[in-house]
Length: 163
Image (tube, rainbow, N blue to C red):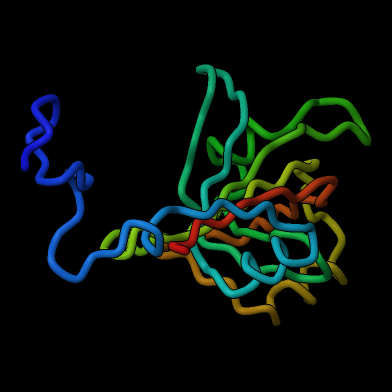
């Protein structure tokens, strides 16, 4: 018997197919605590830096590593990103966001983490030397010898799984 409103046989959901069980395929969102957020981000290498630059809202993909609980990436000294993230005031740092996600499109599952913090320009020789050892490689290539550390103030995230 067909449901005249949907055309479904016996009122079955339109998306159900052979072997599909709607009860086990519904999405289940899960809020992630800060420790889980940082664990997930630590396994990645590509994220999105978000800030308000001289031309407005800017979102840039960057290669990164997590070092001592903070996200670190490389950029060109005196390049656009370096200049955009300088306040011109000693000790003042721009607030930025950094987003990383992992998506399984076929399974319709994944997670997303958003980190908020200050963009700290690495100026000391000792910190610079320590970050060289971390092994951050920029896919863009070129001279990227300036490090910026996002000092994590807040990390939030969520995961979607199929029940």
